[in-house]
Amino acid sequence: MSYKVYFVLVSCLCFFFDKSFSQIVEPLVKAEYHQNAPYNLSCPDSSAAGCGAIAISQILSYYKIPQHGYGNVSYISNGLNIPINVNFEDITFDWDNILLNYVEGEYNNLQANAVAQLVYACGAAMYSDYGKSTGVNNYAKMLYGLQHYLHFSPESRYLKRAYYSTAEWIEMINSQLRDSHPVFYRGSWLFNGGNVGHMFVVDGVNEDGLYHVNFGHGGTGNKYVDINVINQNGTYPGGRPVCYNATQAMVTNCYPVTDFTDYPKQACILEEPIILNKDTLQNSIKINCGDKFFLSCRLRNCCDEKSTIKYGWCLVKDGEIEKILTESTYGLSAGYTFKETKHQQIVLPENLSDGNYQLRLYFKSDFVPEPTFVWDNAPSVVDVDVKNGIATISVPDNHLQNPLLYLSKPIEEVEPEYENVAPGRSFVLAINNSTTNNFQNTIRLELVADGTTYTYDVVLPVYSQTETEFHVLIPKDKIDLEGKNISSIKASYYYNLEDRFIEMGESMPSSIDKNIEETSSVNGDIRIYTIQGYLVKIISASEISNTYGGVLKNLPHGCYIIKEKQKTRKIIL
Image 1 (cartoon, rainbow, N blue to C red):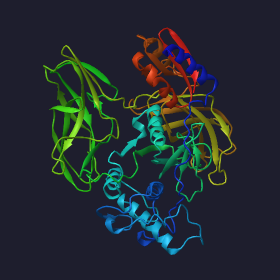
Image 2: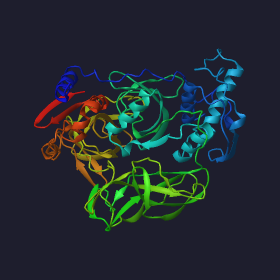
Image 3: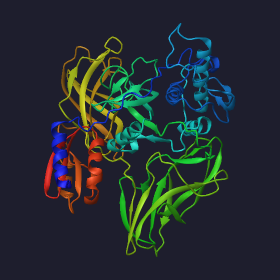
Image 4: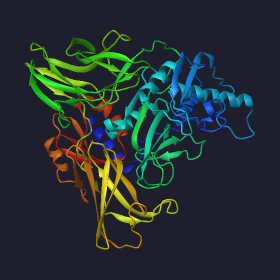
């Protein structure tokens, strides 16, 4: 079948059968644990088990390995101000007596102690801070503990959603689920100035593209959710309903292994996106080889000890280090990051041969004496294309630029959810972000009620390539609007790189739709755009027959424009 016929066939199928390319993964994790007895029986001072420990325990119950932990950990739990000392070799995981759920009167002491040992081992391995609200406060130490003490995959990585487009993020989740691996996930609920974080398990996806979440509340509330909302209860984010939609992150490759023991004593993690020439808005430059430019970074120490690291940039060809270009020194405590972004001057060799290279961050220390690539939190690989002594330097998209938010429909008032718990007035904001830039910052409502102007600020996440309906509750104890007539209302978003509020209109900004004409398809390539005109993917002519269907299958649900030479089509996924 030629790629042109295949293209028409796929387009028609996608348009008329919008579910035909959805992947379905039934919920993988059957355990239904919570943070109280019997799960916390081994925790110090009857502390809550901790949501992170519960999530990891449920993931381990899915694999039923390892048989025991490895090594030992010693640290101070600040919440209780007590030492935590665990020799994991002394803890055996009795999988035959670890049940999938515990119903009062339907388990014995042996079974209760078995799950309590598992949960405490998981919590201690993650450096949990125990108390009434047990939590994990340092993701680098957590990741170190999961690998070293519980032997999770050496490829496990902690990634923040803010640094990836929604298409990239969804594909990473789908890839894990396709391989039958549950995803260890976190999110925050922002409401009325508060910030409540939670860790849980994403373990399935249905035909509508909704993801199954095991919230770690004994099975209560487990359900399919929109990954951009993650509503534990209620329906819409922005008000009293608990939605863990903010500050999302996940651990990929979060599964235990039995055939690997050579975990490095130390790793360094890229804490935030790479910045080119100290300019957050600059993604690419062309320079003469031998000219100077700057790359900026922050690193975090993934280790259980303080260490002085040497770090910098190296030139890489075909995965091998060709030349160390820079080197600096920094002292880092266990789990800590640079206090500030570090800028390093880079100079490529003047006689660099034509070809494709990479600039990669490396580190070394007394623990790791040889130059070692840093781990990604944000994408870290800088592409270098050299031709005739001219180098094109391209850093990964940081997804921090103007999201060009707009309203999909006029703001309207609705009855608030949980009126008896949080009285106030609630307004629907259907916010569209058609760019590849993520937003989590202040949305400002400006209202005129009975001749008086009021402003109310709320922090909302609006992820790239999404349209999300928020029900923003203005609490009565913040602004008392009871009985007042609202004559006008508008919304703005704060764009921190320009330090200003930008009013959201009711149609997409006019600058968006220029991109399609400026990047028309050539040479038989296929280009896929959002309906608003932002380029999502380029598929070269040589790759079309092998990758085209897979690309379409993994795009988020929505409407797309596809350009093939001079032809333009619209499809719905």
